[in-house]
Length: 122
Image (cartoon, rainbow, N blue to C red; front, side, top):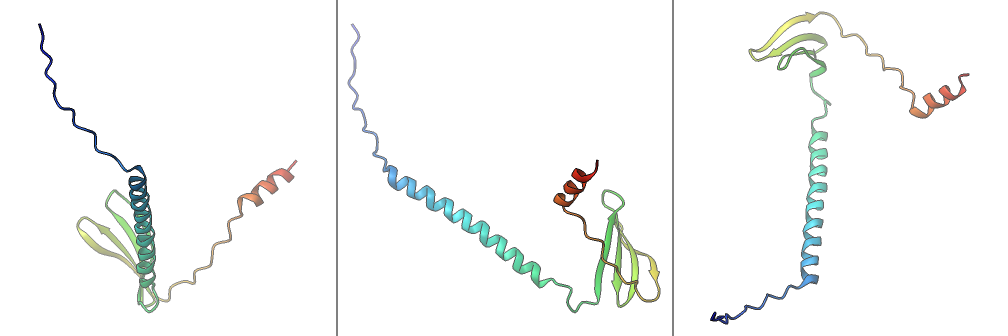
């Protein structure tokens, strides 16, 4: 005959559902607040790096390889073509004279304008 031993069953701890819900919601709001704070701080730090009084300005860059790129740099009215790679930086060409005036690109038509033009075409 099998004897069944009566073991005391531990009562499950009571869970306060309302308190847990409040804790989860507050944690979520804290994380969202940290995301907004990081975005604000990022914008603040980027605003400080404006090219206001600097004498050097990177006009354009172009990747020519996995780690190699060409940079067109404006330095005190001269333009320098610089190659940047694993071996360092090397000046490839110095353009003498004043830098040419940059003309603004024509505005790109919006999607609505292109769609309206497309509808008018027979």
